[in-house]
Length: 347
Image 1 (cartoon, rainbow, N blue to C red):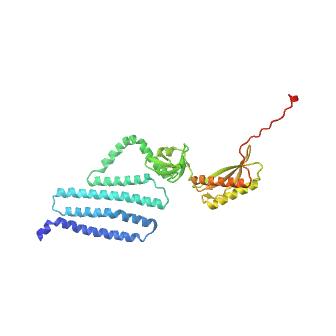
Image 2: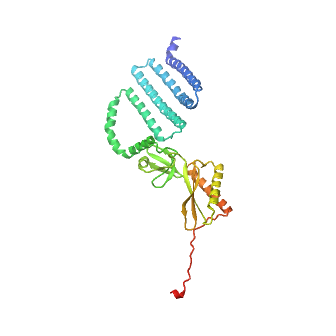
Image 3: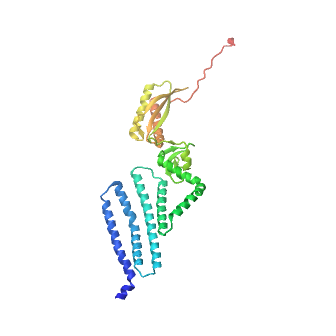
């Protein structure tokens, strides 16, 4: 019996430690599963994310720790034990680093979604790079490799790298500047200096992606965006002001005309919530007297820039039909030529 135990000592140690650690894992997971039910909203989502994220990695940790305990208590040569335990420890550090990087990314994403803040690839990339860098430094430190010479070397070589990657670094810092300044965020509708307009889809580590109304994608380096004059239609609010010029005949009863136009505006507002009544729409006698018409301008607000086109089109059709029905003429440009009869005696 003793010989049998000696022959399977390592296996017994592994199974025993695995059962103990696996039981502790199940207990911790059950506690976390029960604990998350006490919360709602963002706290519940974060705890739920933690629970889902550690289920598989925790099983790997149980296996690695069981192997570590078995090797440590085995009769292997000391140099073999040291090598195996170091490999296991490095795998543990590496797996924990991956878990923390992914977990923090998901938590930050949940927080941004909960607060209706923009999600940009640059934030997640920088966060993961920072966590992975810490994990790598911990692994180097575990192997007894001094970190200070590496940091010093990076500092000295940083100048050369900075010069070689000047454009890339400039785009990264420009992206950070754009995010921190908050004048432009994902989802904003903007107009570039070259006249291109579109929605900001993403602010990444090197470029900003803009989707135009024609579903084209404009990819702009962050440095160019930071240095450009930008019109942001989403600031200070997304509401956009729209103007429609309406010409009518000089014979028009302008009071009746104004009443008709405003009726159509309010009728459309009841059917389409994209046409806003706050601020109130107004009709102004601007630009005024034309060569062949009286020119009025209707000013109203739409929910956002893109909706402004849809509302404007529908409103134009309604006003045209109503004016035609009411017998109010919308004149086309014309020129009256008067020929004067000049008598021969006057020549």
